[in-house]
Length: 403
Image (cartoon, rainbow, N blue to C red; front, side):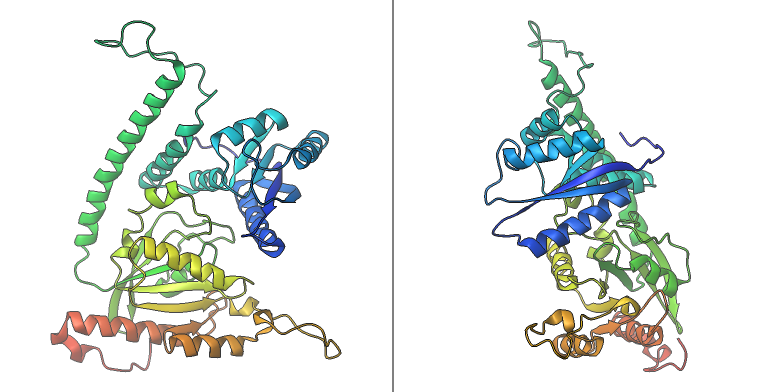
């Protein structure tokens, strides 16, 4: 299922729809993210198609006229993949493939493909494989035509099972086996977490590609893999960090994304145990992204799903070196000033008013404001530590000259 293979860049087109929930700006933003996902997976986007449609076509998702336009473009430009921003039903995917005669993917299958590439450890590979099989199960029609095995025994004589039923049974058996394997690994990891003692646990959470791994490397002086691509980190990494004379455990977790496939949320809930069991969350945000506030909402929604929204949290706004507000010309009397025109100082005031001292503005790459970051994390960890070990409070004074 998860074969290692060399990645060749293939031509792709993206398809999105505008409706009452997604206006033109929103669709453009989603397609920008989808293009970044495509690039991460090893594709090169040649064209985008957008259609305004209130109710998706039950057969082909988009209308027949737009589908014909896509078909002509695919044929003339030798396109290898057509990628839809929204999840397609098995019937829609089958119908579209027959019309376009090329590979048809949706956002979910694209993310699953990236996860399959990124999975390195046995644990991560098992999680991804489980998610892939659960995604594949309702889409088995017409696949695996080489399988003709039948189950014998009492009650199974006669015409036997049909091919598709055999396929589904094999996949269900594989899913059950993977779930048992994950349960076993979960017990092992739970034992490992228990063996870490009573050290304070801090977890980095946030949207994908906001700089969590880069920040992890700066704080822990380690060499966690970091790259300007989505889902560069898939396996949870835990490092022991010492600030001043105060030790704690810091974990780097998988990044979140909007429209995260339900199969992945379920499969990776065990990975997110590091978040669930953390004493303090560092919610990293890419402030240079024009829609970072929506990213915050997406992360909070997933934290709520895994029952971690009420944990102590520090908001860490990263990439301040890349933040550039939009400007309005002096003679421009028409353009209204919006949040896009806020300076960094205005954003600081906004979030300081909301969150008080639970907010920081840094650049992990350029190591800007890292002293303030270390002090704030030290103070937060110390508050938890002296509550857990009140007898050695004297070991950790209120302020240290060096961190």
